[in-house]
Amino acid sequence: MDLIILSINHYKEKDAVITAISEKECFSFLAKGVFNERNIENNVLNTPCLEIDASFLDNKQYKHPVLKEFSIIHSPLGGEYSLSTLLTISFLGEVSSKILPPEEMHLLFLPLKECLSLLSGEVDYDLLSLIYLFIALSKSGYCFEVNQCVNCGSKEGIYDFSFDEGGLLCKDCISKRDKREFEKDEILVIRYIVNHLSNITETVTHSYFEKETLTKILNRAVIFASDSLGVTINSFKMMKKA
Image (cartoon, rainbow, N blue to C red; front, side, top):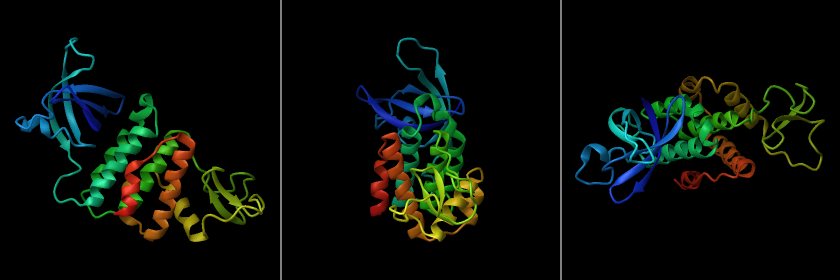
């Protein structure tokens, strides 16, 4: 079974209960010796977002399925990596664990798999993180309108983008009391990204956007996730400091 590990929690002294997603479901399993320094083979399971091919024992003694054997399909920490890489992996894992309820987390398996595969190349971590967060939000029901005014449907006089309103706003629909949140070039970046969520690799590897623009949009998207879904992406706080 192809799995991506999302979280690892101590069980007793040296074992772990691991939560992972497959293409069909999210579930937890028991892995022996993950925190046993002598068990070199299973130590590697203490790696968030590690992708493995796993099989399980038919054992009813424990609450969770028990890992029988596994092989590594892909490690996000393969080769050289930086603090930014580690923080991005943490961000992707947190988004995967927090945006959707457990019964829907598997919907993120393929996008997460693709994003993790890109970490071994030269990519813009903020862009990758922003794309993945937009994908997760879309899976949770927040599909932003970026091709016309979300209120009146006009394609003329687009003036702003609002996470809270659900998309673009024209000059006639935005309140005179509202301060413009995004400038024209920032709106174009949001529009481009949202329209290309199905092409993660192409967008990440063939697009360039100003870091300040990406950071601003990502920051606002994280705030929106917090306000709308009540989730806190702790790793983002560290990403801003890195």
